[in-house]
Image 1 (cartoon, helix red, strand yellow):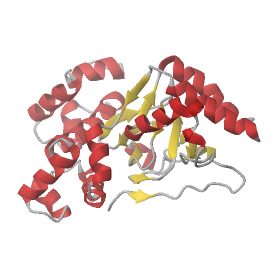
Image 2 (cartoon, helix red, strand yellow; image 1 turned 180 degrees about the vertical axis):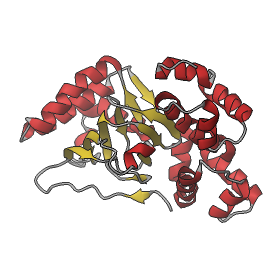
Image 3 (cartoon, rainbow, N blue to C red; image 1 turned 135 degrees about the vertical axis):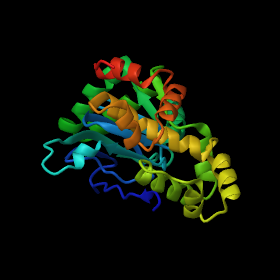
Length: 292
């Protein structure tokens, strides 16, 4: 499977989509679309994939994604359990770069927002006072705005984000450049395969077969397009899921390592320290409030 082009349904009456989603779990397919997307997670937890960025997410995060940037919010497994009683709630704004007219972005007054759209190609996490300022405007746009006020609120939000120093880039520049420059279908197949099977043993030969390449060609291809080896990417996926389990799961660290595809505890501990700069026990104690 590859990243799917997801159709965004924009009403003929409006220039952009603004909605609140309340679902059993978030849309769980690795996908992209030509619209930029501003997402506020109201209630939900799991692992967020944006390009080659892999991080846990939870309530309150605010993310701006650029056009055609592949992404998915993967809820934890419990969200898919029957009668879990959990829900995923998100506020979403989706808009084309030229939704207000093809020449609008060329206006001098739009310079900051034009630059923001370029930065958003890698995905941006909005935090601090900037997020605190944006969220009431988000609510107002969704619940109380109409007519020109909708446009005014969106532009106000974008200008606030564009002039903020409380933004964190998500995906690497190497991934975004290579994703759009090279054959994206192959990378998509590799990503979808990895996200679906990371919790079992994956041989490099198997990944190469998914890419329809020899092992040497596959290794060169993946490194050239993502700036990392496939094993590095696979390890990051596994550690990303392990972080969420350490926070919310009372399983032993050895069991969590096994559930995330590590069959050697020493290898898990070493990989975790390399990526997170602390031991799994320390991570659980700090972020999960649990004793090691």
